[in-house]
Length: 86
Image (cartoon, rainbow, N blue to C red; front, side, top):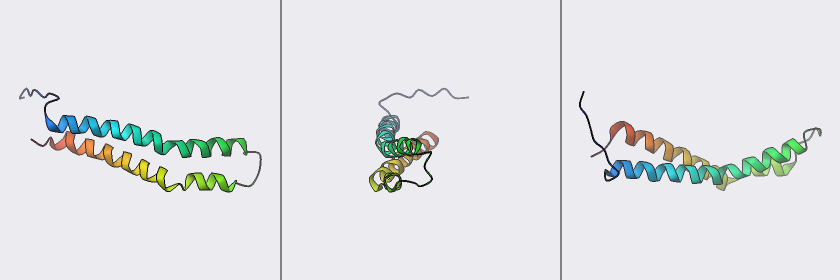
């Protein structure tokens, strides 16, 4: 088994760390609307109808885009870790 020394100077490691940071930030931003919707739905749980605001929060395009970008960044990290481009 070969011993390999990687450092932060390797571009793929730096990019992976930046993607991790981006994924965390985008996930936090994208999760805010879902969190608001959950809290609103829990407050209205005894009622039989769903408030249109809950549906609006769950269909928020900006939150969906942020969550998709966070997932894409996480996938990018996985790709970098598997293929480790030089």
